[in-house]
Image (tube, rainbow, N blue to C red; front, side, top):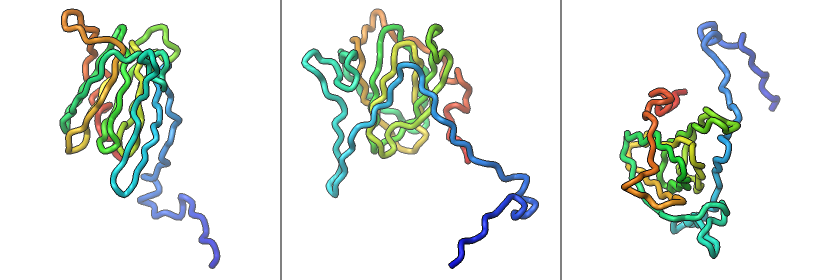
Length: 186
């Protein structure tokens, strides 16, 4: 069977020729210091398993040796909720969204002296993948649950929460525009 001939724009009906565009796949630009670390997700007919973090004798993460865990927390994000933007002067975060859940993550580099100052990142955690996300201090971060079921974040931080002097700063949720937190059509 001969290979079919390639099409060109002129092979389309005139009403489609002007409307067709090419999907772009730009390379993801990482914010300086941010790390997305793939974990091994083992799946069998009975379920799945992933080792999320492993600690050395000093309590530091083996995946991020300079990160010493001081507290671990859990957060549930309800459908339609946007939790953003959080910013810390001293605290650093490591996030894990279970593969069974799905959250849109947004980051913005607020550090003036960073080589990626003002750079943004927008990506999904969970969604069938096992990953941890390291967020350095000074990087604004948040998430949105665009689905219709609750989603979970387990996170590790390098300092204890102090209600008397919280290192919990905020930027407006729509600092990067309301469309930043919407599903990208197309």
